[in-house]
Length: 245
Image 1: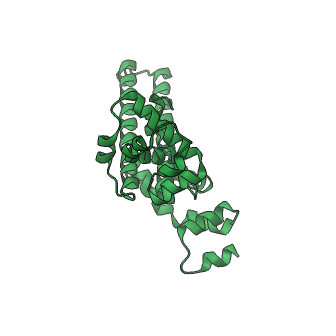
Image 2: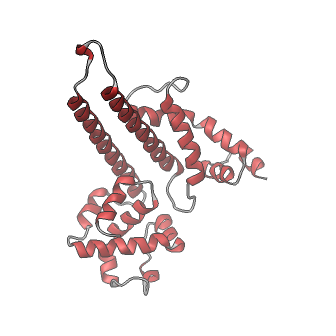
Image 3: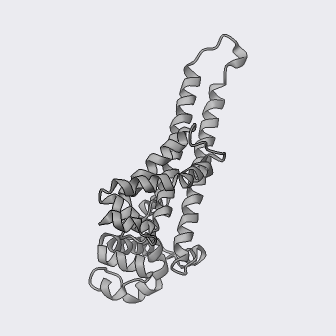
């Protein structure tokens, strides 16, 4: 039945992903084959250079990440599959680059050279590695913010609005994060937010300790927090940890 659905001209990516998750090997193979250019593009964006699918390890890592994204994608969370897969692919490749950079640095420190002019300064190696990690993390944070901005646009919200509507006091921010956590952990409430882009204030009655007025005032901010909790936002989730969720 699933295979017949996949052969129809109006088959959607969403349907293909569900089929693959349910064990349809043909659907999975089709997805992986069809989206190889997408994987290569994601890898190129991270590496800032052309990625050769037949030669570069980054492409293979991206392909494995894409396959894993198929399995871990939550079809009921509202996020687009390709946006989700893009973050997974880029995170894996960044992790690989970090490991490679660390390995090169350690090797450089351990190796001995007959020609002293070829010997790298250990202090320079350390500074170079730290700068690389800092730039990588900065790039990844910006990438997550761009992805969040894209998701917010679907709800007719802007990052500027979220920033401006964020509670000024720490206690209020912690309270908003707690509300977002309660919504995220409740499948029905979470679906209402992600599918309709509205805060289910009536449904929250009795489940949270804040007033209806406060919920309405922090509506945009809470919606953004639910999006962060529901997505692959590694660095943005660190912000939530800082406010003690």
